[in-house]
Image 1: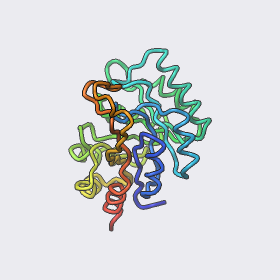
Image 2 (image 1 turned 90 degrees about the horizontal axis):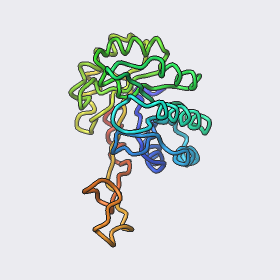
Image 3 (image 1 turned 180 degrees about the vertical axis):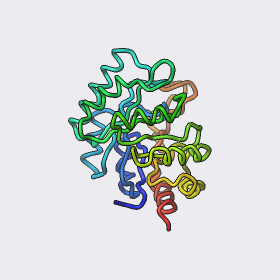
Image 4 (image 1 turned 45 degrees about the horizontal axis):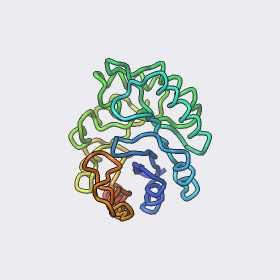
Length: 248
C-alpha cells in the first residue's frame, strides 16, 4: 500500500483516464461536478472501467442542494447504487441527513446493506452536521469505510485542525479522507497539519468544444454559462500535486 493514497475526484470517463495517466491510486466518479457531484451514468462507469484499472468509488447523489431526500429520490439512490455496483463500481459514496442536519441512520443502514462487502464513503454531508463527533461515532457503529471531509470549513486548509482532531478522535475506527480546496500551493501543509494518509483532489482545466459557438444567443446550461468549454481533469497539475504530496 502506498504511503499516501491520492484519490482523484472525476466527473467523466475521460477524467478517470487522465487520473490513471497522472498516477492516481483511486477515483471518485461523479457527474455534474459544478453542482457538487451527482450520480454518474452507467455508461460513464463502464467506459471508465473499460479504459482504466483504477478502483472506482461511484457517487450516489440523486440531486443537488442538501441531503434530505423524498421517498422517490431515496428509492432512486438505492436503485442507482445497486446498478453501479453490479456494473463494476468498487464502492459507493453517499450521505443521508435528517431535516435537523443529523445523519439519517435508517437510510444509511439500507445503503450499507445493499453495498455488502464493498467499500463505502460518507461524503461531505458530514461537513454540515451539528455535532461531528456524534456523527462520526454513528458512522463507525454502522460500519462505513471512510468519511470525506473538509473539516466543516469551505476549504480543508481552513478545516485542517478539525480533520486532525477527527483522526485523533476516531483512533483508526474509520478512515478520514480530507478533500476540498486542496491545491498545489497548500497540499504539503495540509498533509503536515492533518497527519492524513490519503487525500482527495480535483485539479481541472478548460477543455474547448467549438461545436456550439455558431449561435452565441443559445445557452443550454445556467444563465451566463459558456457553451464552448467544459472542464477535464488536469493530468499535469495532478502529477505536480501528487509529487509534492508524496515527497519525503
